[in-house]
Length: 320
Length: 320
Image: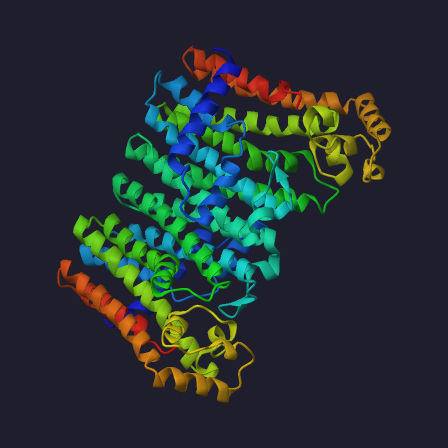
């Protein structure tokens, strides 16, 4: 099976399971909590969870998949709260929870998903010891994600963010949940310590690389292709790796913090390309994926190991 | 030891443990998360947790107290989020988190405490099976608290809330966390199913009674005594049990939804007393406490059992 087929199959499975668990909301709050969860999404985290579980134990119990849902539900909780903080009005082509139900209900909707994530961990079919460790890891990860979001917001008021700060922020905000998806998959399926640790690092690396690729897409992908506003990060003065590398080379992006015409965008891209910024950022993402894939050597050779490798490369090869 | 001494001793212990765990915040967000947690509070929930643990197993391990902290931390997370929703500016004599750090950081500060609660459960000294059950119960409880808060907010737009709706709301918003404190205490200390269930019900009952008593205090206690605005619930048209019983008797409290003078408050109190409303509400709280105490019969006769009984009565005897 190729990666695309695998991702499609897992996404379908996740959607069915989510419907089974939460498909009949009994309260208005439950409906608000379901809104984003049922608005689609690529379900990459549960796919990573499942690949990791099957990579350490072929044909792992289907009932551990509740752990994969826990990660997806956690991701959705963070999105609902982030959207409130960032005042975003749309996500996955739908209006955000707070624009429909108001901020108080949206805070609670996120809190409901947060609770469900931990309920789901308890529901998995795995030894209790593994569940306790998974709970502990997920809890630590949630705290780190919050720290990452707080750092990201604090960057908005700064002009002097350095590489290491960006990497720490992006690892917390995006990396650790992928790391946790992979680690909990291996943990609940009975993987060795070495495998669990390697998969955690793998996930952190590809998660951070994913975000760096997102920043590249924001700059380089035409709106018609990506469905997003091209170069919005430049316009908003976001402290991405691109902006940081540019500053290191003495390139001033501040003049571009305004409504950009297509020709302005082309100009910025040209300047960044000429100065090797784009290549440097691509190399950084590439380096992280290589490191991630290298770490997979602790796994036996299986289809899942191959798909984990493919997934890592897919994270930075996607163009939108 | 009498209840007052016990509560004081446990509160001191809780404060020391919280300092040990979180006393040196390393990030601005961690500081925001600590703010309310370290602003005092009666620490009634961890006291109930500990009483329940010791009531089922004399001299339970001191290391299960992390479970008591988990409940206290959960309580504080809900307060931080509630204060955002209710736009409250002060709590425990301090400015609320969102008024100091802003709403985005306050949402995250609550989310950080939420994570810590589940981390703490994993840290307790108890069999893994008990920890998994405790995690599951705490998660379900968090979802119910959110539902209770949502119901409470929805009551603000209604005039027709009935007793059963109020009781359901108050049980979810306040009762279940007390129930969970007691149940998890017994669960982690190795209590029987019967004891765990009885203590859960006991906690739910006294928690709901506590809230009803709060409503009575709001109406009856002079501001100088309670430190709160007298009769604020009447002024805001809150759907308390008092308001519901009054409406059932055909008493219209709507004209009092305005700035009330001391004489207006006396007038309302007189009308409510003459019509037996105050007594009826007191009887309801009394009934719940009696039911709670009756449920304690599954416990062996110990000092802790006596203190649990005293705690239940204290919840509705306090005058501010």
